[in-house]
Length: 420
Image 1 (cartoon, rainbow, N blue to C red):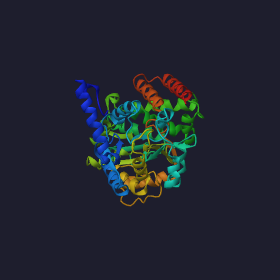
Image 2: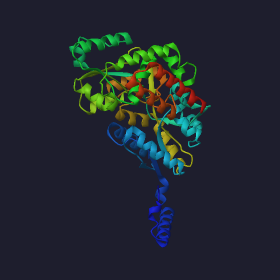
Image 3: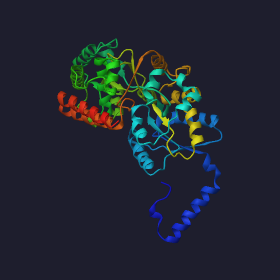
Image 4: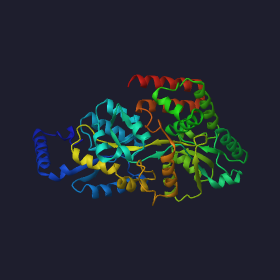
């Protein structure tokens, strides 16, 4: 907020305050060049990636000035709360970060973001981004965001030494083989074969199991209504998800993903299902004894999520925002951002030179694999449906009631489909 009512100590003081502010606004042409970029990237690799993108923005858009509107904490939840308040009071930033895909439906339905399809054609993004991504971010023939990156959700991370001591020398490619490996680890005294956290981290694991059992197309169908949440194949997947929970840490509902990651680093756990931001985090923490593979049964399927930027309705610096969005979508901007963030470019024409080994492998898979979205990170579902699924999964972590979870998932899907 620019002003607060707390300033109203006396009528004269208020009048003076507003008069000075109006004068300052009209006499400060530099303010008209500001582009306030609202994100939750405040620390670590995220902040480093943002800094790289800002440097490229300065080169590509010298007529405009970057203003950092980052709000830290809560894995983005704090920022989303502040953003919601600003949008409700018609005080939008120049642009804001969101997850590309269905999560944007809330902003689109509220008429809070602009259609930027014309800019896609103008900037050549329609051909630079793969068709699967374009299809997933198109709503009723319109596009509302520019993805800055791609993260992969369905990656299994491991402690190489722990696996070697248990005699596990190859990555499992099926769920049955994976469960057999988890049994080997238990037999060798590994207390936590599969490290796990709370909330969305459990939904990520459930999604990977669903992909294994349903396949890419039927998994995507869960989100567009063509696959029945009440089907026997979904029941079977939930049963396997329940089985996997028995190999995880009993205190999972109190853990953030980094707490689960710490079990891997300390050799107390063997595996963790997590997005590929884990590679950058492990590297930053100096832990090198890690391996990675596609989650068993997910071979050939790339489950994606993307951080993206939008043009809000009522943005004060439209031209500056468009220059930011063009930079975000450019080959130069995507490389400057992703090589530091630990993600990969959404564009398929960016050279992998200079990227670490994991990111190079992911870039190859992004071009070759079937692309499916993630509800846990907003690319497959609205924020409302995401919240309902997280809540249902949390309850299941405690009671293990397969029928109750499946019914809750089906009810949530039906409820939020009706709201479209």
